[in-house]
Image 1 (tube, helix red, strand yellow):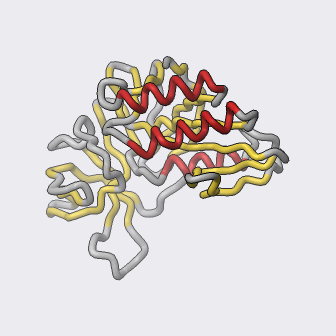
Image 2: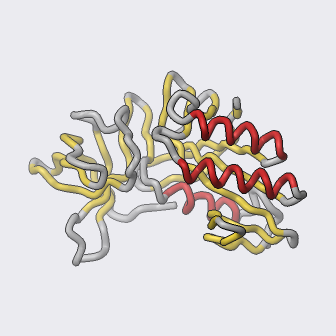
Length: 225
């Protein structure tokens, strides 16, 4: 997954969930933040950030904020990047046999899941991007997600009926120790994840190779639930 025309800037402020003020080429630029999560530990004044130039001349902001440096670690924080990287990973045959039909945005029951794979039996896959890191551990979510818990419950029911069900946590950075649900922030999601695992849902976590202009799924990370 790649971006075109990436530039570095310095984060100044985030007036709301959707925009940020960034110092770019000696001026203050208003940019779109491609992540509506809190990201408080990432977007701190003075942080070095990376901006991808948009291609639509009619849009109000010229750039998207897609990555940030946290100490020596580069973190992609684009909420659309995990699905794009996951699709490339699936097409490469990393989870299902090469040539398996992969269908994005598949509706099953009362939910729309990120991917369906036809192996030929239907397998459902939900993708979650992870940007919250604490002392080498990565946690999800960084804010309560009712929708996320609902998806887990439906995947658990599907797995219990004999279907193939997967959750892929795409860790938008490299070199972490383990993944865990953020029970302090969202106990309902943590409980739903444990229930899903007990029902037979495959819980996967992978880190990513991250550069200012790209993100690629890299290697499995230990899951502790």
